[in-house]
Every structure is written in C-alpha cells, then in structure tokens.
Amino acid sequence: MTFFLLFLYSIILIGLAIYGFNTLFFSVQFLRHRKTAFANTELPLADDDLPAVTVQLPIFNEKLVVERLIDAVATLDYPAEKLSIQVLDDSTDDTIALARARVAFHRERGVNINYVRRPERTGFKAGALAYGLQSAPGEFVAIFDADFVPPRDFLRRVIPHFRNPQVGMVQARWGHLNDTANPFTRAQALALDGHFVVEQTVRSQSSLLMNFNGSGGIWRRSAIDDAGGWQSDTIAEDLDLSYRAQLRGWKLAYVPMVVAPAEIPPLLTAFKRQQFRWAKGAIQSLRKFGGTLLRAKLSLWQKVQAFLHLSGYMVHPLMLAMIVLGLPVILVRDPGTLPVGALGVAGFAPPVLFALSQWGAYRNWVNRFAYFPFLVLFGAGIMLNNSWAVFEGLTGRNPREFLRTPKFRTQSGMRRASDYVLPVDWTTWGELLLAGYCWIEAAVAISRAPGLAPFLLMYALGFTVTAGLGLWQSWKFWIPRLRVSGSRFKVQSSKFKV
Image 1 (tube, helix red, strand yellow):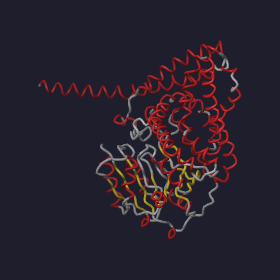
Image 2: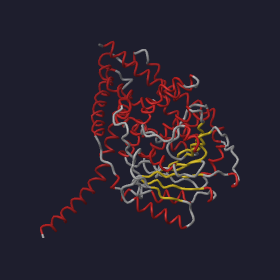
Image 3: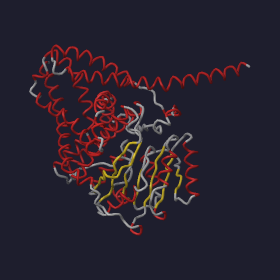
Image 4: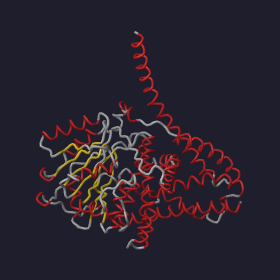
C-alpha cells in the first residue's frame, strides 16, 4: 500500500513537472520572439483596398455594459460603406430595450448597424454567431463580447495582417479596463497577460496551434465556412473553431501590439464561473480533437504542444490530488526523499513567465508584478472549482451547459449590479474544508517534512483567502438585496391587510 501511494504521488509530481517545464520553454521562446512579434511591420491599407467587415456583438443580459459596447463599435474608424454591425441580442431583461434604443440612435446618424434577435436561444453564443452570419455581408467578421471597448483604429490595424490568404483569423491582445481596482483584479490581469503576452506570442511565432479567444479578433468568413461553421457541441466555441480551422490548413495569427481593452470580473463568483467554462470547454475540445490530432499532418512537436495546450487545466486536478495525498505521504515518508525531488525546478516556471509578461508589455512592469503573490493565492484557491470543471469535461457531464460571466461596467456599475451578482456555490464550502485540511497538513509537515511546509501553508492561505473573499462579497451584495426584498414584502403585506 505504501509503495502504491508513493508511486501515485510521484506520477502526479512528474505530471505537474511536465507542464512546468513547458512553461519554462515558453518563457525562453518569448525572449527569442518578442521583438519580432511586437514590431508593427504591416503597412496600412488605403481605403479603396480595405475589404468589407461585419462586426458581431453577441450579448445576453448585459444591461450595464451594452450601451458602452455599441457606442464604441459605432465609432470605429472604417469606411462606412464597408462596415456593418450586428447586435446579436439573446437577452431576457432590460438589455433588450437599451440595445434597441442605442441601435436606433446610431442608425439615425447613418451607421450601418442592425439589431438581430433569434426566435430561440439555441446553441448559446455559437448559435447567435451562426445565426448572424447568415445575413452578414462582410468578407471578414470581427467579434467583441459585451465587456469590450475596442479602440477606434482596431479594424484598420488588424485587417492588413490578412494579406496572406492562408490566414484565417487574427487575434488581438486583451487589455484591461479595471485591472487596478484591487489586488483581485490585478491578479487576474497578471494571469491574462501570461496567456496573451507570452503564450499566444510564442504559439503564433513558433507555428504552434493557437486559439481565437472568443473576442477581440477577426475571422475570414471563408475560413469559418470551410471549417464547418460555429458549433455548439462544446462550451468553448472559440477554441473549437480554432482547432477545426487549423486542422483544415488555415493559419491563425496573433498581433500583441493591438490591444482591445475589456473588463475583468470584479467578483470572485463571476471569475470562478469564467474559469469553469474555460476549463471545461478546453477539456471538451481535447476529447473532441484528441484522435484527430494524432492522425493530423502535423509535426510531432506540434502535436505534443497541442495536447499540452488543450489539457492545460489538468494542472488543477493534479495539484488537488497532490494536496490530498500529501498528508498520508508525509506520515509514511518525507516527500523530499522521493527521486522526483529534482523536478521541483519546474516550480519556478510560473513566476518567470508572469514576470516576463509584465516586462514585455509594460514600462511599470515591476510594480505590476508585485501583485504576483495574490495571483498565487487565488490560483491555488480556485483549484477545486477548476478541477470540477475538468471532471465534467472528461465525463461528459452537462455537456452543453453554458453559464455566462456577468459584467458590471467596472466599479461604477457595482452599485446597481445586484441582478447579476452570483451567490456562492458548494465549491466555496469545499474550499473551506480544503483550507482546514491544508492547515493541518502544514502543521504536520513542519516537524516531519519541513521542506514542504511553506508550500502547504501557501495553499492553506490560498483556500482561506478565496473562500473568505467569496463569502464576504456574497454577504456584501446579497444581504442588502434581501433587506430590500424584505421591506417590499412587508409593504405588500400591509397593503393586503388594509
């Protein structure tokens, strides 16, 4: 039994080390490709040479941000006769009236913008994009989610990168509208920058399979059609289409010098929902394309990287298993004496990658990277949430359950955002249990495996902070709402008595 326990624990550590060393590889490759990637070598196109573009805005219950989005897109700097805008609204709340009014306002000003509403919300976002595509006149299709505010020159700067007819999609870098609001949003900004500044740059420059991120990018219409169109059999329609297009021979490009700012989820429950959807969708895509990738005409290195890409969220259940098994392992043997101890070098990979992401994109990178400890805490704290997402993705549980991430228009909208605030779920209570387990595990490790104690204390603190923040935000937003509901109930009751 002891041998099996130690063997399983070693396998888990090796698995984590593989992802860690791959992160180090991306860091090294970023140093090689940064100057080339961030150099704007594409010459602008004259107005006569610009192609027709349709901008699609898929929205669902976004009353706090929909007007801002429509206003930003309606003022894009692009020839009016070559630009069309579709507001693809599946909403069921006040967003409908707000979007209709804003579309009417801009139509009166001469903007070619249309309000599009489907008979039924089948296929969620993928279904909305496919429905709009039926009447989209553009040769190219730009997509922005509700929380984005694209710069006026976005189309003019991105379209020239389609000069190569094999390029099917060009993705811009996500910026941040509210990253400096608090340590929580700063930590999320670091995580996003790690992906957009380092990982996407390396994938694009190294001819590795990459992905459209669902917003802030432009597709060639013929590439969408050739790849089979938008499909909703996974909840990661963006990743799904990206891989289908690349397996058909299309190239995807990334332009980190073009930035499309977006809102970072200010509430922990919204962040966890976003992470859950991304993790589950990635694993669903792994199941969908795993066999196809093995048979694809790609190099072995491209295949390895594709599998690591699609399975990246497996890190979370591996870490969760390591923590759960850690206490019995400590009780039977000091984990530091296991032969995989040298693989701990891979543990330095995350801070290196995130430091490079700040150095590569910001002048005040030192100040921004100073919030890395918060990323460590929240990254550890959402481990249970993401592990459950991976479980659902692997087992096929609730395969098409698409849970949107609510948007709040940064801080100004939080005062009137109670309709979109999410309550805590079972994972919060699970995080509290894991926090207690890690505190006990760390206490045992101090005497039996002191080398592991700091690591376990970090996870104990991460689970504690994450669960605590979730409970505090829930109390902050739901208690006042309950009081309001209670007062209304009392008023209605008194009227009934009269």
